[in-house]
Every structure is written in structure tokens, then in C-alpha cells.
Image 1 (cartoon, rainbow, N blue to C red):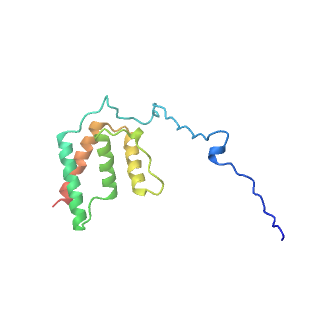
Image 2: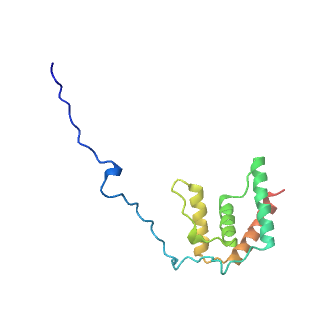
Image 3: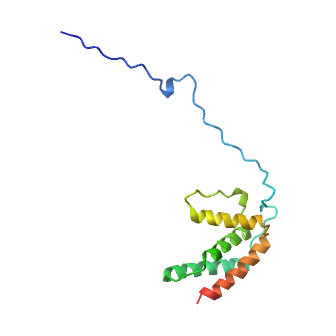
Length: 145
């Protein structure tokens, strides 16, 4: 009877048999300072939007839903992007804490870029609210029958 030779495979270390445990990389800390060209709305200077803004906001939202359900053409992309940016600023959202959308999220990138453009232009919360009300009323007259 002949014996077969068996090939011996060297022992590969398993995670539990390693001499040192693997460390996860520590999260990068973002400094609390903002770039000089970006203004933020912090809780100290935040004011609640006016009742008129809230009313127009609700009307524009329901108008959009009605138009979509009826299959009708609504406001243009530029008008929608401006409404979005004005609403974000008027509601006191902090742009510096917003996450930048991924490269395949084209709608999200367009919204983010418009919001950034308005923030960099120095649009205040009060001015954004006034512009939203003005544009919202224009669109309601134009599209809401």
C-alpha cells in the first residue's frame, strides 16, 4: 500500500489570532468655523417664518400636487429651484450643515447649487421670505385656476 503525499497549506491568521486588533479610522472632525463667503442662519438670529409665508407655502404645495395629478404643466424648473432656495433660507435652514448630494442625484444637485447661489449672494431670511411670497403669488395667479 502506497501512501499519498498531502500538501500542507500554511496557516493563515484569522482576525482573532492577529497580534493587534484592527483600528477603525477616526472620523474627520469638521471645524465649527465657516468659510468667509458663506453665511449661516444660527439659532441666535433665527426667526419663525411669517403667517403669510406659511399660507403661500401651503397654497403653492397644493397647487403643485393638483397640477401633477391633472397632468398639467406647472412652474418651470428655474421657478421651482428659486422657490426651493427661498423656502430653505426663509425657514432658517443652515446651509453649512447641508450634505452635498451624490453625483448621480441630478435633482438634488440642482437644488443644492441654487440654494448655495442664493446664500452666497447674501440673501437674508427676511428677503428670502419676501421673494418667496412674491414668486409664490405670481405662480398661483398663473397656474392655479
